[in-house]
Image 1 (spheres, rainbow, N blue to C red):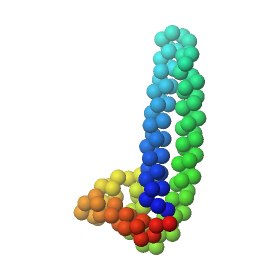
Image 2: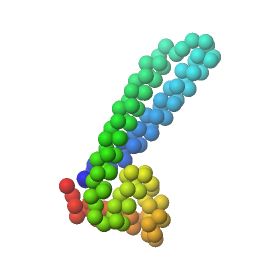
Image 3: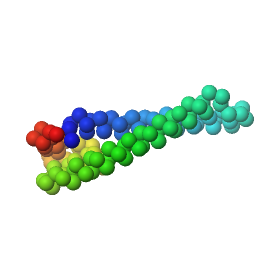
Image 4: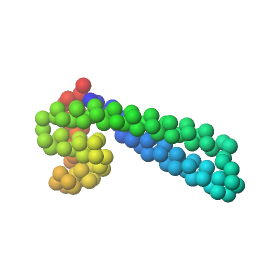
Length: 123
């Protein structure tokens, strides 16, 4: 596992949230058109379906990545390091929340623990 791959995973999660927001906006737009004019939106339906398909694709990619990250994290021998990676990449917590849970005085404690591990065990 590399820092870049984990960074890409975090970006994938953000991209998924953004697509879900787009899908919700498009669904509201289609609903408003139907309620206001009594007909469906001619252009929004295709875009809504494409967005739904994109969300399904991103959900699948996210699940694949989570499975691989989970297997990798379980192989980390040090409990503190393993916990920090789990909290960040499997539970999606911020570095600040991770630091509080693990008893670090600042956000950088857990982040640096993970960075050191990645630097020492780059694969």
